[in-house]
Length: 198
Length: 183
Image (cartoon, rainbow over all chains, first blue to last red; front, top):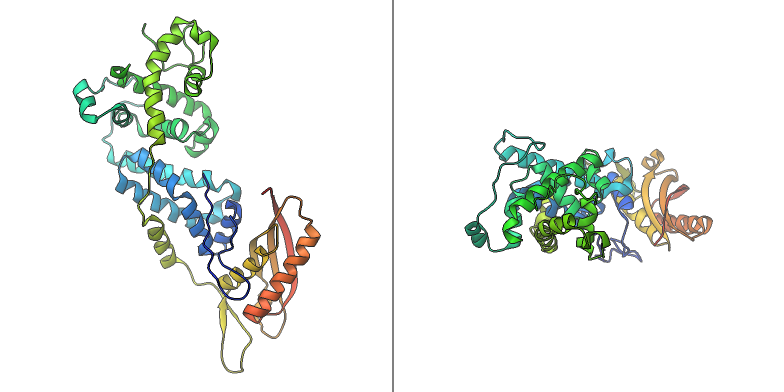
């Protein structure tokens, strides 16, 4: 996921800056914490795609996701001194981004009377809706919107970002067991909504 | 056959997660191949798995200006760093921010093979141009690089850069190996 960040610019003498090596997250975090903006810029560059991708998948709104990603990075900059383990920067950053995305999703979503432990009502799109939506992927996008934001976040982190139950639980401030439970309910509901495609 | 996908297991005892993983990876699942419960569950799961895989593979690109927007806000909010006076003609000041000095010194540390400079702190005496300045540097060292050799090279590199680029004379250069990296 992490990508090389290279931009060799001569800066006098025999040195070049930024250095032409790919620095690890921990090194960049320590430097950024001491006020090295260039080091933080490298972290933003490295993680802008996954942070935005997670936000846009939770929110399904590109403009809102861009704002969420921006706020997540700015919060990360402000709170860099709170990181206990610099090498765990990615999980810490994703946690900030997911928390903000979930808050935004809850704020704009009408409060439903059901919680995620109760059965969801039948909101399966009909064949016409499927045809209009234009395919299986569009049908899944539609179905994901019917999940609670927490279920959707679990599905995105585990099934689309490929995280383990433990990683998803860390990011979602919960337990692996709770992630597993939300995923099972999400899977059941999503499969039901895609039954026209069997 | 009605299938309950919300639980852990199917009526045959097979884990739904396991079935999902087998379908996702295409790995053979001998039990599932001969089990009507698993076959019914697989029929329900397959479209969801296909759609999820396809959706996950869709490229997603953030707006081109996302990094720029973030960094503009951060640059606007950053607090000024303490300044270090640099030697120069009497009566005229030349200062450098501690942050900028640290950038120069870390970059010098990075030139040593196998070294990544991390924390860089100049001692308070840096604010007195009449004395040599102490430096506390933490580094990450590549596995296999001898610490003593690397430390000697780092001291030489940062001492030279401090003198050449900043006009600072470094005295004590304390180095802590905070981490080892493998590549």
